[in-house]
Image 1 (tube, rainbow, N blue to C red):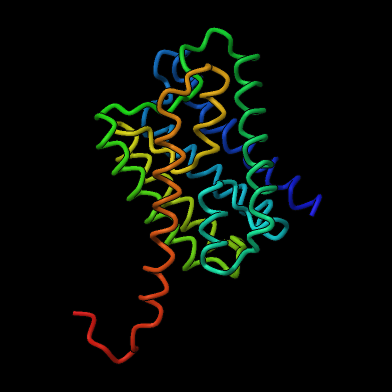
Image 2: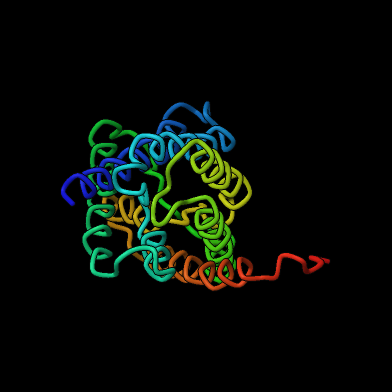
Length: 221
């Protein structure tokens, strides 16, 4: 378990460091990275972390994903709290390091509703549901591992960040939002980025179970 928790801490740390770090660097470099570059950074770091830690901890790096795995019966509920603590700790450590090394950054990658609270909630809910559904279909048990899982999940994160970022920040991950919120001490909308992704992940579980049990000879049309 120590190895698993270390993997979850480090994976979440590097995810937040690279992803929100791209946003912070973009703010101090006059927009050199850009929205597309930021979205690709999130997708690529997710892919890399799955390849690095998938066979150790399952490469969750996201409390909503851990809860989704537990709700699907693939992960023990008793291990959920310590996984989430490791993920939150990694995210906060990453944001703390960014604040230290980029003091001139105007943002640490905070997720802020730009289209209103309601619209941002819907986006986070639906994007996380799609992400969790993808994870459940390409993972083995509660483990995201292998080239197929890494590419599929990384691609989903990237394209959802592309279209959802301008509306909600495309968090899909309570830990990813918690780190910057704590380091900037702006917790006003953190509840949205904890509730919506978690509910979205939970929705994906019965949806995938229903689709998986559909008769194979039924016409999908």
